[in-house]
Image 1 (cartoon, helix red, strand yellow):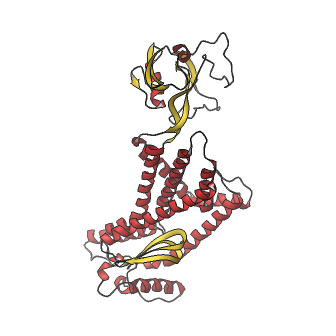
Image 2 (cartoon, one colour):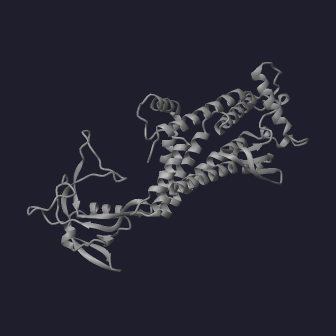
Length: 438
């Protein structure tokens, strides 16, 4: 049951993301005067629709995308001065021009999309991907500031009895030659919440670690909250060799894979793990890191698809951080809902769902910017080409050139569409026979 709930949450979240993507196209198009005849979420047969004003709003049966129909996407042949050609590809181009021209009502040629200036075309076509990026930022912010992420809290989980060597195992007992741990000598107890160290507030575990490092091995005061009241403890840290951790809490290792050690002030306590809210300042850097990684995947997509074919049909190991399709993402959602965490509760599942949806929106942002039609990036490339030609003509004192004849890209559009369908089917098959799990 929980697995099915996870899939349902994913489908709803994906549909909302697609719907907002199309809103990102529709709103600026209407603001610029372009007639939008349809706003649809999904493909295939229409399940529901209503007409408001001059736009039909609806939901279709296959929730794998969506579209807004902008009237006059392709300039007519007489506008671009295209000669009549023969052949299958020429017929395809002419049919696209004629279908686009038929949507333009008498007297409304000025409302056609192809009549927009280059900056306005860019705003309309980039509106969808930018909406997904903004939605990703909002989801990350909701996670960081609302649910938080698993991390070390300021509540004490264990108090060390002695200062053990850095390579000691978790079950190593203290010996008579081991010095007592400063936290134990100070009277720290499990369940105490750290309030301040050496006068420095410790709202986060990282604050406490930084305060210990900067204060050194002097006698200091540690203030904790115990049974609803604050208690001041005298702590005398000792200098001890301890592993070095990076900014995200991972142990730093040398070239041989051994932990890097450093002499540092040591108190001797360990925190509990819980859902910790992160500062708002971390939202944009985290989102940017996700964007950077996703763009790297999209940029190397052909090579990754070759690796996927080798893993699916050749027995090679499938990369756990590689490309997955909707089936794989659905499996992730089901696993999140089914597994959960007894210690962290449902808040942990909510956080994972929010970050999964954020990553999907980043993927929609990056993938749609590929400069090939029918993706948004293809229309952006066409608008930039048209704008570049106009600027060159203006600088040379020549007449303003006609709009770019983007209808001539229809053969490429169909080719890319077929390739995307093939890639989608391959991902579905790979996610079934060689699944990637969390």
